[in-house]
Image 1 (cartoon, rainbow, N blue to C red):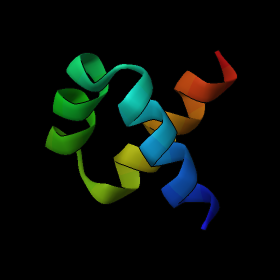
Image 2: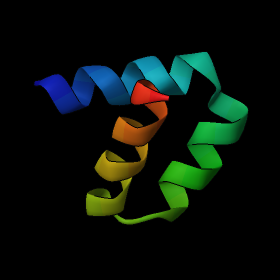
Image 3: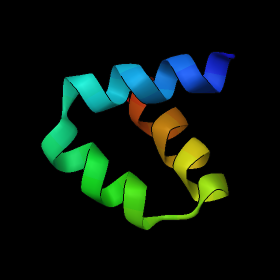
Length: 40
């Protein structure tokens, strides 16, 4: 639930930078990257 919400929020925030970078990475890496972005 939390991961899904964060993923959607990040996608809406910067779809041009997140969508391509996150979509290319694997599911596990996606969560790690999103977590880092949210904290930064």
